[in-house]
Every structure is written in C-alpha cells, then in structure tokens.
Length: 118
Image (cartoon, rainbow, N blue to C red):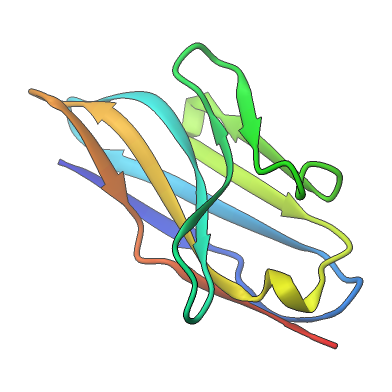
C-alpha cells in the first residue's frame, strides 16, 4: 500500500504563489509516475501536471506558463510550484501516484485546498 500526503495549500491573493508538496510512503513500492490533478466545485477532476512513466513531464496546456512540477526521487516527493495564481485556479488539488507494490495501482492523496482571492 502507498500513502500520499499533500501539503502547501491555502489562501492566496490573485497574482501570488504557492508551492504544493506530496510525499509517498509505504513499503515495498516503486513509483512509476506522480502528478497533480485538481477539482473545482461543479467541475470534473482535471490533470494539472505530471511526470510520465518515461520521466517526461505533462502539463495542462493552459497552465504550463505558470505552474512547474518538480520532484525529489530520494524523498519520493513531488512538488507543484504555482505562480501568478488566478481565481480560476481555486480548487482542491490532489496528488496521485502510479506505483508497483505486488501489482500496479493508482493512489490518491486526500487533497489540499487552494483558494485564490481576487
């Protein structure tokens, strides 16, 4: 089993920045990819940014200029730096990981709220 714990959400004014962190823990697992989704009220969950299984990065096209995903493999941690935040970025941000334990599974964090005030 893999547990994901997110941190770094909060309330920020439009134009501000936040950095989210997500750390995977457990035993006997291998991370294949990690990334972030978000879900705003009344909207479907959407991909924000991710590391693909071949080590590349993938961004929602509209966010690439303002958001940056990075990682520390030694800590099983992925980060999301969000700059020039806008009110439409308000959402719950979820970390996910695709990992092998005894099988390949997809795991989710509990979510962290990001609220951008205009």
